Image 1 (cartoon, rainbow, N blue to C red):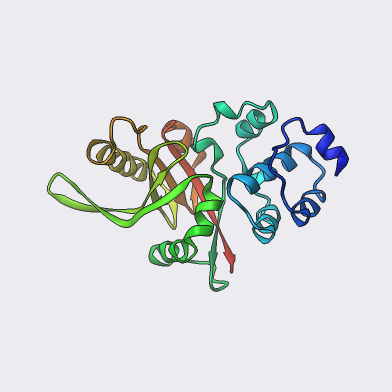
Image 2 (image 1 turned 90 degrees about the vertical axis):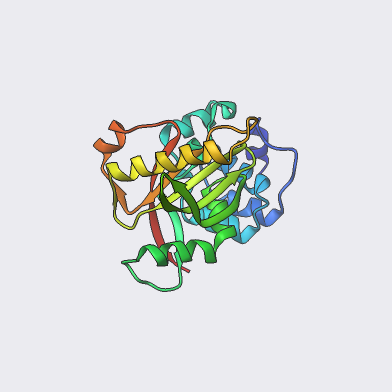
Length: 222
């Protein structure tokens, strides 16, 4: 414990409980320990919540570019989408391997508080099946969030199969709608996250957009 505190120049002033630190001291990588200290403090994680996040190897699921910024202590350069893990864990009430769109959305809503914490810091829930009117047609955003820390709306679209070019076009239309109808001048531009079973790396790179993040989901039995 002394070695960790002594070497960690970025150690936060707020102290965690000893049970938190006992869990953290099982880790060998100081950068990984710093990451879990930060999220434990920022998200008020209990010991059990911290244990689950470590068990799920959340740090390992961060993008390499994000880890590099954290290691170099350049947190101010991190964007909201930099902090989203891939895959994100979604807990379900059975050991089912295949899941419908409705079941996926319901599983998220039943564990909304935990899901938002696993997604990142500062997310709040606005609504699900959020109604929008584009042209003469009514459409529904799967889940609409707002991130307090980054002061931006976040459109969340769920896909139980592979994400396609059409999905990227759809989420961009939803983001534009929110920008034009809900966003106020002092808020940042709307962001989009596609949560899918899988995605094609080539298509992902071709449609790469700093405002949109595509991640996979991983089902875990609650």
